[in-house]
Length: 227
Image 1 (cartoon, one colour):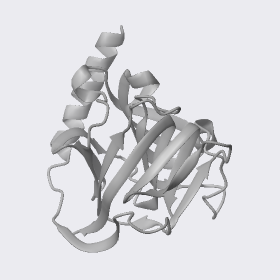
Image 2 (cartoon, rainbow, N blue to C red):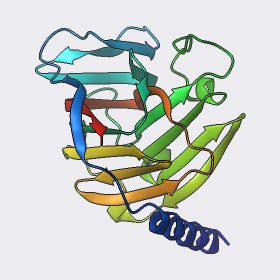
Image 3 (cartoon, rainbow, N blue to C red):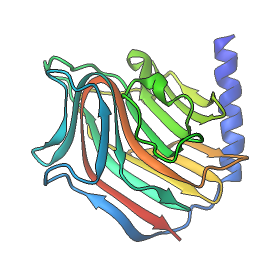
């Protein structure tokens, strides 16, 4: 039954991909960060307990946490945009090292509050938002999923469980997320993993780097207008 479900979602994803054929051209840079200075322009939500750290270190944003953490860009995005960054899951004996949960939120909005930044970092705190979510190597590196949150539901758009779409330790992944004319796309190391035409597209909202119980590093982040 599960194999049939995954096949069905893959076929649906292919149909969505056929609908999303134009992605514009990268234009003006809206924001960029090489994380070489003290962390600024971001809002971090995580448990401030001993040993948990979210900071810029050695030219990278480091999330080293024993629970959930979301690091939000402190300004919303609008319209057609391209988000790109490099990200690594560090696994070399650190106390929080766990090969899991390279996650991202984008176009996030809180339908009940103007202020988005009211949460603790626990994953379930975000269930009531409207947003797109990709979880690469979730569930202890057994699933990679695209979801669309809204109205209290977390719609599963598509899923992979094969090794080619799961995490490798200490690998620098180049992630690209595009939002263009009602479609969103996730590319990893130049390969398209997810494409989705949303019948009710999210056209503005906040971007957040997300993880759960791991140590990860982010570098070379750029957000551009798609023309």
